[in-house]
Every structure is written in C-alpha cells, then in structure tokens.
Amino acid sequence: MNQKRVDLLKRLSEVNGISGAERDVARLVKRELEDVADRIEFDNLGSLIATLEGDKGAPKVLLSAHMDEVGFVVKQIEKGGFLRVHNVGGWWGHVVLAHEWTITTRDGKEYIGVTGAQPPHGMPPEKRNRVLEIKDIYIDMGVASEEDIKKLGIRVGDTVTPHQNFRILNDGKTLLGKAWDDRASVAVGIEVLRRLKKEGHHASVALAATVQEEVGLRGARTSTHLVKPDLAFAIDVTMSYDLPGSPAMDTKLGNGVALSIMDGSVIGHRGLFDHVEQVAKDAGVKYTYDLLTAGGTDSGEIHKTRDGVVNMTVSIPCRYFHSHVSLVHYDDIEATIDLLVAVIKGVDHDLLARLKKTKYE
Image (cartoon, rainbow, N blue to C red):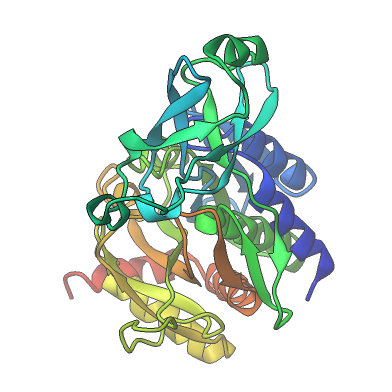
C-alpha cells in the first residue's frame, strides 16, 4: 500500500466534522491541494472547490465527495450533568449505546463522554428487547452536575462526534475508521487531482468537497451552481454485501469500484454509465454494480442543476457506515481512483455530444 495515501486516509477519518461543522475537514483538504489545484474557492455554505484548469474552452468535469459525517448536537443539559442529544444525519439506536464521543465546544475545546448503557440485570424483557430512541439516550460526561458541564464550556448546540481511531485490520488492506462515509471518497478526489496534475488532462476538473450531504445533499446544490459542470460524478460509499445473511450481490469489499445504476435520489445517466463501464473494461479496472435505493448521494442535486448535468455516482463498498466503525478496502479505493483518472483523461466535446445524444438518438 502507498503509505502517503494511507496517512491521508487516516487523517481524513479521524478529523471531526459533522454536517454544518465541516471546517476542520475543509482546512485539511485545502492543505492537501494547495500545491496541486490552480484555484481553491468556497461556496457560501462552506463546500470547498479545487480546480485544475484544462484546455481553453474544454468541458468542465465535477467530482463531488461530501466532507460531513453523521453525529449529534447537544440538545439539553440535565441537572445531573448528563447531555441529551439530537441526531445530525441517520442513526440506528442499536449502534449508539456504550460508545465514546467527542464533544467540541464553541471555542474548540474537546471532551470525551460515553453514551450510557444500563446493565441488563433485573431489566424487564420489554425494556431489554427494544431499541432505544435517540431522545431516550444520554451522554455521561463523568461529572456530577449541570454546573460542572457549564464550567467545561459545553453549551446547547455544541457538536458531538464519534470518537474512533483509524486502524489497518488483519488482512493488511481492510481499513477501519469512522466517517468513511464519505471521507474515503474525499481521499479519492484528492488523489485523482494529484494524478491528473502529474499525468495531464484536457478537461477542466473541479473537486467539490461538499457540506451537509447527510442532512439533504445541500452542499452539492450550491457547489454545482458555482462550478457549472458539463459532466459530473458523485463519489460515495455503498453497502457491502459480504456479511452473514446479506443478499447474494457482488458489491463487496475487495471487488472493486461499484458503478451506480440508481439510488434513492438519482437514476444514473445511462449513456455515461455505459461509457464508464467500457472504460473500466478497457483499462482493466475491477468493478461491480451498485443499486441502493434506500439513500441518496450528491448526484441527487447535481443532475437537476440548470438544464441538467450528465451525471452518475461511483461508489466504494463499505461495511457498517453510519456508526462509529466502518470498513473499506484499500484496493477498492485504488480502483476508484484509477477509473476516474482514465475516464476524465478521455473527456472532450465529442464525447460529451455523444453522451447527450444517447438520450434521444
């Protein structure tokens, strides 16, 4: 494995940045691309757009990967010093209990707390067997009173982020961390720009590291309006069907980049999908298919911008996202980079015209 790439993945996983509080992630991405991009700018929601200029008059390609992760904000401070929280993004109650969290105050101080989990001893079956709702879950800060919480500087509205360290697991290529949804894709976008800068390209290429995807694909809308792309790819994670009881599907860790047919927010442009699949075959990039209709991606906003954008999503198989720990495979990240680089190198006005014609000829 490329150690510099692994180090980038580690830093992107461990930095904190729930929806609406992505600043530290943006700072990290900006540092990585300052010596690569020809221009770095921000939209008014905070999405970062890093651009490699292409040939004069060449098409514009947008890569979109969201910086935000799921988490919570402090909703209420109880007299006993416990914190009640409100979810930012989707959480399943089963994965919230008995975990450590980082509470970040307005002035940047960080404190560790834990979601309390009562022992089952003496608990009635109806309570023991149900999933707790988020409103019934609290964070124990190890203090005795509301006054102690205030002395720490913790206030209602402060952010609560999963506390989890990056690790390489036992096959040497499975990567454990928080926030792979969607920091694994942010890493892909950074590495694609680095490759194109070194190897050459004709199209103008913009990477949008977007904000607030987990609460409504919001940064994708504003950043796409800013870039005005001709062609666009959202990069995101998707379900990995290699667990006990999973459906018999080929989208699994180590099986390559997943080409998204559709999700809950978009049907991929069929002409673009077919072209990307052919590029993957010609380049020898390992790939599979993705059809996850239970959620959406940045493509859900990208494809509807202006008079429409030729657009699809490419996905990285991932286990356990929207929890403290998620797993991705290093080879799938490499395959995603290789595919996007190969596709973008071939983008010109002739290709764009052919793709558009697949809708009516």
